[in-house]
Length: 483
Image (tube, rainbow, N blue to C red):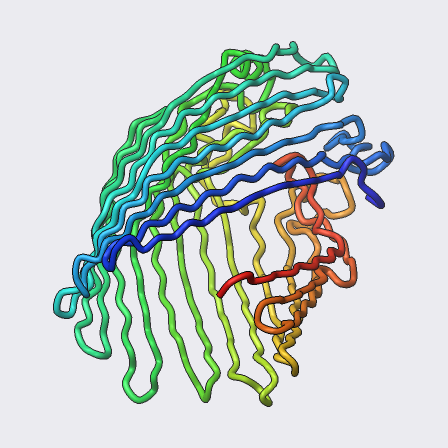
């Protein structure tokens, strides 16, 4: 695609932070933020492009736009009980709204989806040290109320249009946790804890999940070995399903056409790592494996532009990661490198959200074998150098390499790429800054200096094909009014 159209964006935001030391042992703090963001969904005006000629993803008839608003207020009270004990309470309120709108003439479907959520909750923590132990315990809870409006006009005659219909849903989460860090001696530290969650939404669930870990400092060498094993519980997102959505899904001739309440995700993760320092250099190597049940993902509903949360039977993420950090070289700057070799796969059928009810539909029988997720990229590399220049200035470079994400059209005969993965891609970024005295700083950066464009995703998730960002120029100025 040589050029995209209908791609305007604009945003506004504001932030406030109030801090008061009420007494020597009590600190009060209030943080608030509001932002709003509007963007037009780009389309390809060339009807002869392969994406549209193949009927795989036609965007030339779309004129969609999304508007988002988000705001929160967090109050925080920190009380110092003693030199080794601290208590903290933080109530909060959060509002979020996302409105997706289309022209009534959009082809093949014109979608309206308005969603707003209100959250009220809080968190409390108690932390104290005793002998060789550092204990912490606390609780977290919130209540959510969500309202949705959904409608779709089917302009290609493939199904019946659905008028705008409202829906409402509620959810609540309560959690309690405790942990301990035990310093056995100067070489060995042990970690342990337990968390309990009770979640009530489309499905009411509860879970206990333990976590243990250890670090070992090898004498003389200074190497650090670490290991971790733990279970995690991720509450399912609230999913409001109006009668209009159910009617639309039930009328689909194939694919996900039946709604099933969404279960929460449950993860089992282990990590092993080694940190090796040498003459100011630091090499860190990590291996982790995350086995997931009820893997939370998303999928579009029929020909609409609605992307509902779904739960897949299982997933497995495995990776080796490495970072290298240098000391200050030649009194100029530091070198960095980060590399990841990761395999992200999923297995089984969709078990929550909009699921399949047609036994002869291939989309309803994905089988027990693992296959790559849409965001599976086997090799990722970032490397660069940050230099400190004279007269309070600095300059940095970064090279990013990715081996290519999963090809959603592999072997289909559609499009220019038929392999299992999309092409590898490399981009180059630069940034610099200068301080004018102690109060004023000016920084600038150029992302994707060569303006190299590459297809990152063609799996039709979150609204279609995705390319990497074009060349972007950014400039920022910061002035400090009072020290």
